[in-house]
Image (cartoon, rainbow, N blue to C red; front, side, top):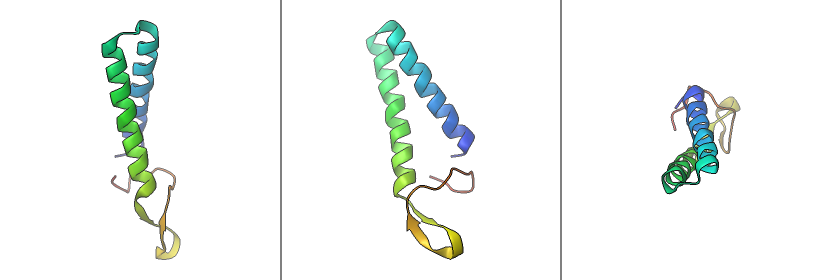
Length: 71
């Protein structure tokens, strides 16, 4: 997933959240929660993946987003 794709997912999540608070319908809540769960899953996967940082040292954690790594 690229940074742009992630940003698009977060944008969709925020729009769904705004829609829920505007309408307060069950369908709007379902969509909002579904997108939030997807974003949380992406972030958790990103946080927990082993990454190769400077000089080939393997570290656990979050580095700035880039499009060179798949999630």
